[in-house]
Length: 485
Image (tube, rainbow, N blue to C red; front, side, top):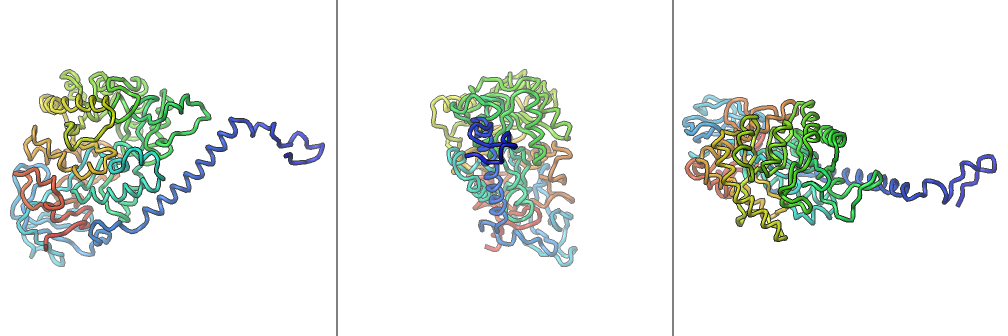
C-alpha cells in the first residue's frame, strides 16, 4: 500500500519497491528491534538485582555497622607470615581494619565478638572465576532468558562469599551489573574484578556460534553469547581495539583475550594459535592506554610466547608450556594464573571424547606447570575456572586446597590471599578496590574468616566452609556468624 502524497510528491511514495523492504533493510530493522528488546531485558535485570538479598547470608550483612567491631580471642594468619600472630584482636571500623589491638578494654563502644581461640585469616581470592557462568549449565546459559541467567549468578555470588571467597577476578562474562549490586549492598557476594566479554577471533575459544551462522556480514546479527556480553568476536587490529575499548567503557578492570585453543569450545583445537601478534599488541595498547593490563587464555608454548612478546601480563592456564616458555614468563615479570586441572572427580565435565582427551592432556601438564613456576620463581596466582558446572562450584575451596600437593600449606594460603591480591592490583587506575586486599593489617579491607582450626596445619579446612568457617566478614559486614552456636 502507498502513502499518497499527490503527483507533486510521488518521489516520496513508500511501497514494496522501496529500499526499506529489501532483505538488508529487513535484517537491520530486526536487529534494531532485538536491540530494543535487549535494553528492556537489561532494565529487568537491573530491577531484579535491586531486590533484597536472596536470604542465604545473615540478614545483618546489608546493614552498615553503627559502631566498631572488635574480634578478640583469636590467633591470626595475616596473609604473609608463616607464624600466627597471638595476643592481638582485630578492630574494624566501617569497611576497613582500624588496628590490631591487645586488649578489648582499649576500645570504647565497640561490639566485641569472642572468637573462642580460633584462627582468623583474610578472605580468600579466586584469581580465575566466572561469576555469571560458573553455576549454570552451558545449554541453559545460551538459551535461557538473560534475567534468569543473572539471577542464578546472584544466588551463586552469595554462595561464593559463604565459601570464604570475598574477592574474585572475573575473567569472562557480563558481571558489571552483578558487581554493582554487590558493591551497593543490595545482594551478598564477593568483590568482582570484571573483564567483561572475552575477546575472541572468529573460530576462537570465545566463538560460540553455530556453523549455520556463517558467513558473517555487516548485516549479520550478533549471536546469543555476544548479545549477552559473554564474548565479543573481533578480527583484525581495528576490531580488537574497538571491542577492548567497549569493555573498558563498561567498566572492565582488566581485559581478557583468547590466544589459543581450549576444551570447552567446539571449533578450536588445543594447539591452534589465535590472534596474530599485531592483534594482541592492539589489545595490550588499548588496555595500557587506560592504565590496566591484558590476561590471555593460552595453553601451549607457542601461544604463551606470542602473548609474552605482545606485552600480555597474565597467562591463564599454560599447562602445556615448556621450560623455555616458563623462563620467558619469568624474564618478562608476567604472572602465571594456574588452575588445578586434574581430570578428577571435581573437574568440569565434557560430553565429547575429544574434549575429555584434551582435558586429560592438560591434567598431566598441571603438575609440570607448577614445578616450572617454582623453578623459575614466576609470579604465580591460583584460581579454579569452574565453568558451566552448578555442582562443581561447591568444590571451589576443595580444588584450591589441592595445591598443597606442591606447596606448603602456608604458601597456598599466601597465594590465595596477599598473592592473588597483588595480581588484582595490576589493574592500576582501573582497580575498583584500590585499598589493601588479602591482608590482616591496619588500613586493609575488613574481609576476614574465622576458622574452626588452623589452616596452616590443615589446609583441608578451606574445603569445608559450612563446617569450618564460623564467621565470614566482607567489607566490615558480617555475612555469617555461628560462633555463639
